[in-house]
Image (cartoon, rainbow, N blue to C red):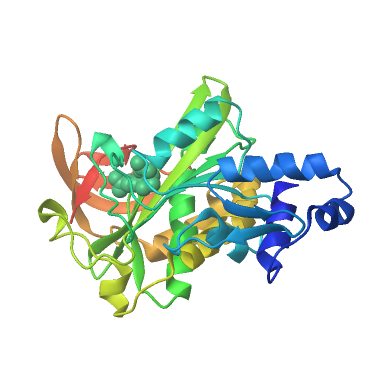
Length: 314
Ligand code: BTN
């Protein structure tokens, strides 16, 4: 219902009366008011004027819940946007623990404690990057869910390629362009041995950065660097969410299989001599394949090994 109200307000030129909303949606005026209050709590600025009704204020940053929602083509995605937050991933965890439904998406214009893989920090500078965490409640077993990371990588890679950026996937979860990282994916799961409660896919894209912190300068790149243009983060996020919403049911039904061929085609590591860096050791081999569960198959002098986690250098 809130989504419907939002749509009516965003399509209106000026004010929309409470009476009109209540008639159109078949709910009471008090019901309209309660939904408006709840939208305000989520960060939407809705002005109300007696005898005129409600009007949605557009956010100045260009990246807001409204900006993303109004560009989505798919139903059922709910955006909670923050101007500044420690981490969208941590906020999404909290919402999921409190029972938030699948396809609740937390976004932020700035993260002060963004998290990357293996406890690393992730920088999200105000007004430039795309940071989003998607809560998913999938009908999958915990051991089947791990392959969502390469699946999401294929889908995100497809969207970026559609925008004309020549991106590739680096196992396990980086999207590279010109050999540098343009997007990172952090998948976290809450499960018991035999039951998946929820998954959170965190997506960080370097969009309009013109500079990076010293320590990632040599390895990071932004879409703006790559294309010479300023990007609309809300349009990009809407495109990513639409594509994920459209194609993840296929993962839910058939796992990674329908995405595997594309992954192999997009991969930067397949048929390359690589070094795998794990917590206590580093070792060399030739990456030859990816398993249906997302494990990388590496040929070594002593035979084939399956890699579940680690970092790769080529
Ligand atoms: C990585 O490459 O290490 C993964 C980076 C994932 C970063 C995203 S940004 C949105 C979400 N919130 C976080 O704190 N992390 C993820």
